[in-house]
Amino acid sequence: MNAHKDWSSLPSPGRIVAGLAFHAAFLAVMDVPPRHTPEPGRVAYDDGGGSSFVLDLGGAAPVLAVRDRDEPAARPDDEGIRAVLGRSGPPEPFASAPERGLSGAARWDGTAWTPAAGVPGRVVTHLTDDAHLLAEADIALGEVAEGESDPDALAALLASVRAGAWDREAVEAAVRLTPYEDDEELDAEPDPEAALDVLGLYASVLREALEADRAR
Image (cartoon, rainbow, N blue to C red; front, top):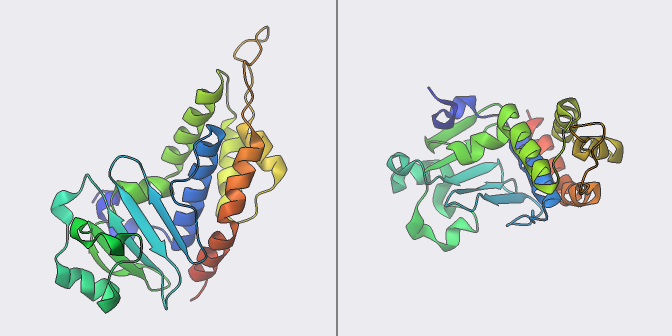
């Protein structure tokens, strides 16, 4: 089964929040702020194309609710959603627009996303996939200036974000570009401060998510 249709393949809450923080940091390098600022106990993501998700860490167990434009046939019925989310229903901002429905919902039991209904969708799984995250980061840097990124530095930063232990040096190395030719100069420099600021926004909720990972 494809990962975007398989809850058993979806990593932990900490991995999702780390991927979101990493992705948001490189959007910030392009001067694109997060559409949803992380809050204590909650992150939301909107890809700008009709897909979004909310991860709520504030209850007895983390809850993930997903709307994926590519999975209209996966929409579970109300009974399936209630079996996962209980009587409280989906978290905000989804609760304010229930008519749009969900393509997936799941609860983290400490080791897996179960119970679950529908599918996680690409809007979530892309943020847990190394190849996708690193490719998007490289594209973001390329939007700032024509130059060559350092794949090892990008991978090292992703690993440090997943551990909740990045530092300025790692961020500066990851956003640094070098000219394609020795006699060329970059016409612009990616700003590490923008990436650091956004990672700082996610630091608190990432700690909560990593603690949820270790809860059992």
